[in-house]
Every structure is written in C-alpha cells, then in structure tokens.
Length: 395
Image 1 (cartoon, rainbow, N blue to C red):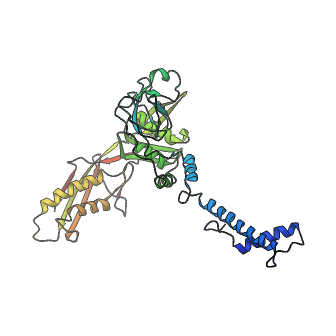
Image 2: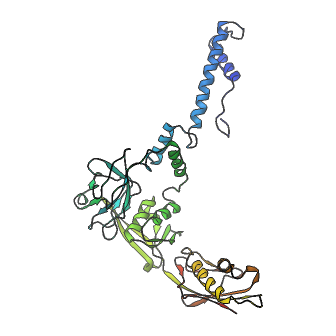
C-alpha cells in the first residue's frame, strides 16, 4: 500500500517470496536450475500469485464509488440508505391525515400500499396544524411498470400504535408516475458519490436543508446560530409543526436546541414519535423595517436620464435589502454595487460621481460600524424594505 493506493508486487518479488516460503519448510529445495520440474512449478506458481495479487489490488480499488463494481456499489448504497432504482421506480405522492394528531412524525422508510404494491417514503414528514401532511414522495420497493390511479394508495403498511392506527388515513390525491426504465449503474454511481458529499445528520447544514423543504418556509429567514448553551434555530414561515418536525428529524440531541432569550420570539410545537412526545422550540425572527434614502450625482454636465437612474436604482436597492439572510448585516458596499449594476445601461459607473446613503431601521437612523460599510441589526431579526421604502434622487 502506498499513499496513492495499492500497488501490485513485481513477479520477481513474488517468485522470491514463494521460493523463500518453500525453503523455510525444505532446506534442500532448489528451484533456480533451468529445465527442472521444480523451476517450472515455481514459475507457474508465480503466475498464479501475480493473478491473486492483482485481484487484491482490484478489490481494494473497488472500495470507492468511483471504481466499485455493481455489487460493491450496491453494498455502499445499502450503507447510505440509497436503494438502486429510486429515481426510476414507480412513484406516488401521498398525503396522511389525522386531525387528532398534529405534529405526528412520519419517518423516512414508512411504508404504504395499494393492496398489490408497496411504496416507501423517501424523506418523511410531519402532520401540520390541521392534521394533514404535505404531499410526501413514496417510491415502489420493486422495479416494474404499472398504473397508480388517483386515490388508490390507501393502505398503511407500517404498523401504527393505538389510537393512531384507528384514526390516521393515507391517500394519493393524484395519479402516480409509472416507471419508464431501470436505473443504470452510472446513474446509481453518481447518486452514491453525491450522497457521500451531503451534510451529515445533526449538523447545522443538514437541519437547514430540511427546513428549506418545509412548505411556506422563506429561505432567507432560515439560520442556525450557535449560542452558549446550544443551537438556536431561526425559521420564518411554514407550519409550526412541520418546522418543529424538520428540526426533530435533523438533530441528534434535542437538548442542544435552545430558544431566544426574548421569549416572545419563541415558537414551541409538540412532536409525537409514538409513544413519546417532544417539545421543540425555535425562533420566529421578527422584522426590522428599513428605509433607504440615496442621493447620487454624475460628472456628466449634460446628463438628462436622471429619472431613469432613479427608476432603476430604487428597486435594485430594495431587492438587495430584502435578500439579506436573517441575522446578517447590511453592507453599504454591496448596496452600492447593486445600484451601480442596475443603472449601468444608463449611467456608466465611471460617471457616477456621488453616492450617499441614509438608512433607518425601525424609524431610527443607523450608521455603519466605524471604519466599515457594515450596518448591524438584531442578530435574530431580518431586514425588510417595502416598495416605497427606498427613495433615489439626484443631488
């Protein structure tokens, strides 16, 4: 083995090792005289050892998604929980309903059926406040092509505890998608490689990716902050139970999830993973109302397109402010760059001679940090500028 991987032994080294092994058992063994039967046997044995040594190299080299044969690739898929055929097997979107159980967790791997075929939930989900889940993707656990009519997937195969086994239902509001082909080995290899690169469960990136998939969640209002006592999850939008469910599915230790010191910002939802229930707290980030006043000018003495600059610049600044991720600061340099890019077709940057900005947050004028163009806000809040909050004038 080397830093670059396994290297085959040379035939000379294998022959030498073979003879040394035999001589250790028979001190009078002589195999280096040409034409002798013993020399012929050792040469043949060396060739066999070379084949076995190459098999060793090939086996070690195959323990990677880049070079694995189909069998080992499938075993890697089993370890990662990625069965072959998932993108191509027959699939269907299913919705669970139980008005008495908002917050109930439907884990990945949950199985439903239509009486003939069974389908496995790929990501899992949670019943929302109204007791209804979002449409959840379920993929057949066998290959083949068949129709999945609307309303045909009504059986819950995975056992449910009492009383949920009597109150929970499932159906497919729309027809499923029949399989049209089988997944190729290169396609499966690509998915295995990607799976090895994703964030692991329990990491902030993993929790954030689950929250992004919750219907109604606003991507820029999602952030994971590290506090003295654990992780603080900021999330704006979405159903509280589904948000809490995503956090529950994404963490390894719920005790590490903490709320805000400003308790009015905290949202707590009870998640049911029968027979246990867990209270999950996250922070609903408040809005910071922003106004921006820009005064610009140009070194062109006969410039007549000032109104166009104003019309192009204001929406660009508003868009910049409304794109800042929750808890992140406002950067006046980035604001200026957005303004310059928006007006470039009317006024080249080289002719923009002045750009002065006044910013208010919740009605109070704020100034950048000393020596910077950074304006800090509340680390648990987000900036929001309305359509009329940005004024751009030439002066």
